[in-house]
Image: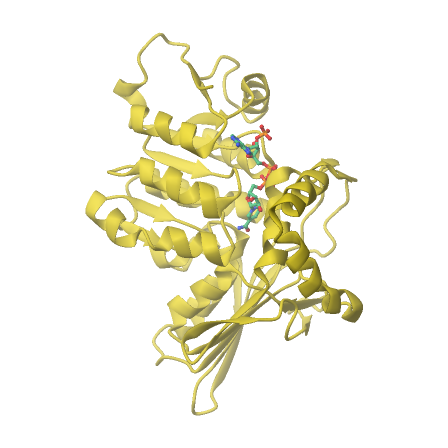
Length: 371
Ligand SMILES: NC(=O)c1ccc[n+]([C@@H]2O[C@H](COP(=O)([O-])OP(=O)(O)OC[C@H]3O[C@@H](n4cnc5c(N)ncnc54)[C@H](OP(=O)(O)O)[C@@H]3O)[C@@H](O)[C@H]2O)c1
């Protein structure tokens, strides 16, 4: 069921080219992005499956109480609306990006732009595969426009600037996020289950290889003296670190992967179980409804980290420091969206720093700490 609510009586088309649509505007990231873009004077239109909930979230984010909303409950129906109304930029925060991103991004072409927050290998790879199509269509598509991918990609890009192609790169992502009281949410639950089923990945001799989820556990000491553990993961950050550096050997770790030896040992079995479709659905459903208690963020800062090594033994290390990882994500998504809405950005399909440069990370509130 799809329904458009217009308040000024005009058929959306005449002003559609100014609109920025936020798919998933009732969600945590969607609300933050709506508030930021509304405050910056952009014409924001919430898109999602609950009209009243979108209006309530929109009002809280600074939209008028009778704002236009688009009610649509699947990527395909949202794509139909995009084709009909031609918004200037569509921001996809609905999750399940491997399935939803290509459908929504294709609908934005020709001429419209697209932004998402994917950070898994399949979704990022599928979106980047639309590069030639996007160039021909004059559209800019940006995937990974959040803490993941940008916080590590930007550090790798900085460390490689003006230097030859390195031999080896490792990136580590440690987001520190305050938890809102409520439920975990289906979009985040699906991302967690998908990370478990995907297992690990790494680049060896330039080839993307399967590896063990939780490989290469790291004990990271941050420049501010705090510390955290991380372990190997298959992520969009891995693809971006490889693309931006050209290094033949690349690994990625994340603090979201459990590092306790017993749990790490069980991860492959859990991943195999969750790849059974019925068990996956059940797990996403249960996990998505799991109650979560409000909690402050565990560390003062979120950190993206990269270690880059060259064949002659040269080694450089750098960090990107941000505050709350969710706030930084909303800042990155909003900044990318605003730039695309204002016509900045080359046609093609990109990760964020590849599309808009490393300054994006500082414009969104991050600080580089480089050796
Ligand atoms: N790359 C990064 O650094 C990063 C950071 C944070 C989050 N993320 C990812 O971004 C996504 C959003 O995160 P979040 O925490 O904002 O999730 P969330 O709070 O669960 O929000 C998801 C939103 O998508 C909507 N949605 C879900 N399925 C839909 C459907 N079939 N049709 C229409 N709308 C639908 C939800 O609407 P309802 O209100 O109707 O449920 C909600 O508004 C997740 O996939 C998460 O993993 C990435």
